[in-house]
Length: 331
Ligand code: ADP
Ligand code: MG
Image (tube, rainbow, N blue to C red):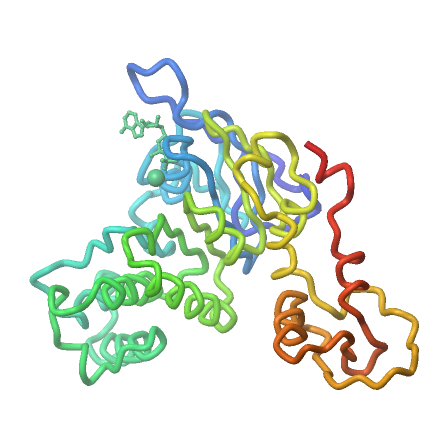
């Protein structure tokens, strides 16, 4: 029995632990996934992001063993699942893909109830769960339960895909570019809804995207893959924007890191200025983001805001406190 008590990044008892997980396809020289080691904590929302072909999908599909690793070990919830029964494993891991994959001749209710019926739940329990899940993803069960997939929009189908993946209440959700084929406006709405949903369900989520903005928006931590599945950086959005690990990460983030940080930093975390006693027209919450507060200041023409229960901040304070470290900004 291998020792799993060691820790990599201080995460004890991770939900997902990958150790040297590798995929070599026959007939190709380069591995699709080079030995990959990472720990994912319980309830964490992790984004895997990187250019096309860098091994994101292969990595995700090794976690639920839709792809068998060539080498390495996978633990889920403290259990070595590298060689366990793959069908059994998949019943406890939700999986959402871009193509949704709803079964066309089955109603929405039957699609969502698929895994529970495979698990042998009785009809009453399944129908109760189906209605609960449709409500959870914002689809009125009395309207949608008996419809068929083709009668739904792309965004609605993707919501059904999420509901189906959640059906048996799996602790882990794997999502492969789930919003990739959806128009930008609907995609933003689905992202926001999904973040709210995650606040309630607290699943351990591994979410693949090639879109760094989507990753920065959703992930508690982001794993940035370079070509050949090299893990270039695995850290929080703020840390990645503040201290990109190398030139690859810097170029992958692209322009605008300093401005994007303002959507992540909260005013309560900035050092307050000396209170001059000048009148302050605007009060904001400590947990509001710097970008939201700047928006309010610009709208109101205010030079200074009071952070609720604390001292005041000027635009200049915010600029100085949120400036990127010189070294990180230097090219
Ligand atoms: P991503 O999801 O990041 O775009 P993939 O994981 O799909 O990347 O692919 C990683 C690499 O593995 C690519 O070079 C791809 O061509 C190769 N690959 C993926 N699936 C197979 C397969 N079934 N057989 C051979 N090579 C594959
Ligand atoms: Mg892919």
